[in-house]
Length: 170
Image (tube, rainbow, N blue to C red; front, side, top):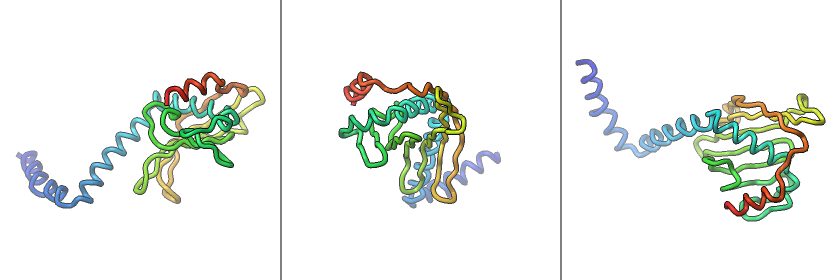
């Protein structure tokens, strides 16, 4: 009986308010999408691929700079990537530098994505050690959650053939 009373209250009070107030409807729908997106981004199957891809991109920075076009944009201090260049299932903008990268998603209400950096203290001449974080929020409310440490041979890079394949899949 108690359960029926709660259901009636929700149906009679909460739902009409939700549909009469477009802002509440938007926040409710957007919030659910954010939770779903966060679960996807923090899934080990997803972030392992992201980390490995970003490590290769950072170590191939000069090669990426030399192949700028519509979806690979070269700037004075970084390379930005869009579309097929991002790991499968991700939308947003990737920013690549020799010592780190980020993939930013979200927008006006909530920024989130990945932050990726070279761990210079743990790296050696033969192996680069990279750290991947899930990042959410802005300014003082920004939080980072460590997801993965990647060890990659320091000489490993994308090849020119890899770049051609990526461009063909755009």
